Image (cartoon, rainbow, N blue to C red; front, side, top):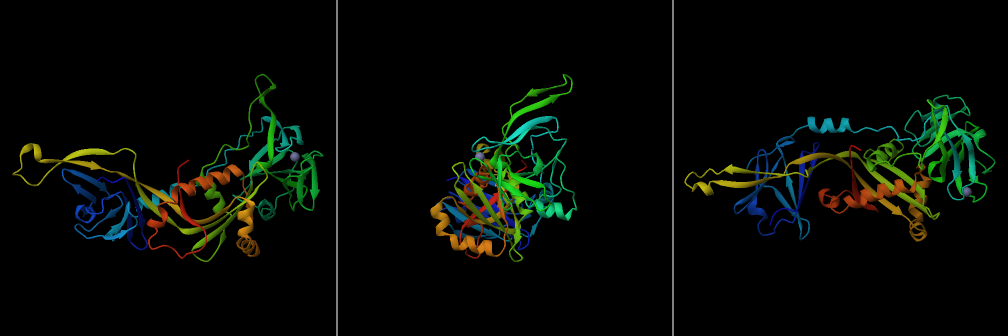
Length: 398
Ligand SMILES: [Zn+2]
């Protein structure tokens, strides 16, 4: 029975590789797997599958791997390669970087800001002559603006970060209500943001506001043209979200970071996600979508010509970076109440609660859910047991 799937985890520190083989026939697996210097081979009758690994590791030809049965459908193969190539792995690490936020607002636009619940105007039709990202990848602009010794913002300035904008509070209409430092909508009372320490600046959560009456200045015609635009940012990938969130993570010992996420869904339901992110990056090898087949000469010369070649199915792999994450996602009042002790403990130790948009939370949850089924098997032996599910976020270029 051919392989259905294959995932390889490389650990350059411990010089181990774990190979998860899905749907390998139980009876045949030990007899049919061969380790050669350049990769792994599965031999079955006149058919062979070959995974070239020589770009990443050098294996000891003929070595006997250790088998660990995972379940009826999967087997884990543990190998000790002679060496692991560092260069392709290092190249990949340097290729992963935070990209600029895909902000759709420009200085050539005029627009209104409204409460997204009740449509109350918060900022009247206007343009900003300076629209820029906050100077650091921070979700706590209070700290950034103070540390940079920045002056209070001019009314013509608008700064933005992940799920927030910062403006001078004087541009806000009377549609807001102040409760200590918090800013609420005057009509529906949802929290829209907060006043910052360097007043009169105000932070508004992007997921509580909508942009309307957008007009784009056409310089040639010297007039504003209506243009459709609903969102401040184009959607972000799970990779870009995680890279930004890691900039705001709190260390938890030498090996782990903690991130405390909050969101409010469209029905007003509060949700939390608690992430414990492993500091060490994982290197994974997974099959490329395109495979190739080739015929290889058999060594036995006395075989008939038509039998002297063997069909070989080559499974080329690509290298990916991943973060191992243990996480809890509490999405309704029952779950929040059942895990109140854990939530309070995270609050007590001072982990900042970072508010993200609900669609961002969904993006993270989708990625974690889609990877969680095989991660516990690859992470062998399993890390120390704590609450939550174990998964990866696999870095993509988008
Ligand atoms: Zn409102």
